[in-house]
Length: 339
Ligand SMILES: Nc1ncnc2c1ncn2[C@@H]1O[C@H](COP(=O)(O)OP(=O)(O)O)[C@@H](O)[C@H]1O
Ligand SMILES: [Mg+2]
Image (tube, rainbow, N blue to C red; front, top):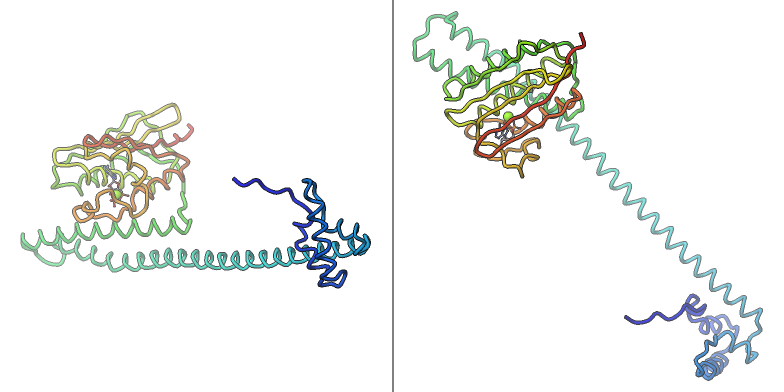
């Protein structure tokens, strides 16, 4: 690397000689003379400034030299400040542009959330009618139905239920992205709730060779929770367990006391499992490890991202353990109601 020359005043105030000529402090001939003299003096390896040469040759008096150097310094400083101001203005402009873009982006996010929430609610109303009439028909209230018709209606009912579950996921998602996922906590009979969600999940799983059941400890106290949201969370976990467990497998919801004031809920399946390296991905919204599962089983990839948000909104933490090819366990504790 080249060695750096020491800083001299002449480097900071460039081309002092030219400046002096320009401003008529000296003539061009004076300058040449002084430069030649400076060269001479420099030979014995000593620094000898041009200004010094001019003064020594009496081509300029020291006061005038000082004045000229001061002028140059001031010019330099004012140029520096102008450059600074320019830079600052550009930074401000860019910041304002970025700010605008950010505002636009959050507006769009808000619009998206509103859109999803409006559409989901709009979809729900007609679906309620469809479900109502299907129910009336299948129970024979609108006249007798043949066996074939009964079968067709049963399939329609299942599809309607899937559609409804999907819409509910979207509504939950839009609430969460608007920051409106409110948790209304109260004492919850978790034993009753667990048996209820398992019963519903088992009904949905009918026809698939996967057993679903609840193992509920007899001494479980009431827990402090939002009962609707907790039911939703457990349903999501059970649905996943059923979805990702091949024929012959088992899905169990366990409810048992963890300590004197904690109740542990866990959903254990004997399914395909999740590779350790991909555990974090499953909590990303709209993310599915195997896209072909959507075609086979439905789902929008929203469940787990919301499950985790709801569990955390309870002040709890969702834990997942999985062995690829052997099964997965999701679990989280809830606070017991103080008695
Ligand atoms: N019990 C499970 N066993 C294996 N993989 C699972 C299980 N639960 C979730 N996953 C993986 O995580 C992904 C995201 O789950 P989720 O958010 O509930 O979306 P979805 O059920 O709509 O696919 C699933 O698509 C699947 O790849
Ligand atoms: Mg799911």
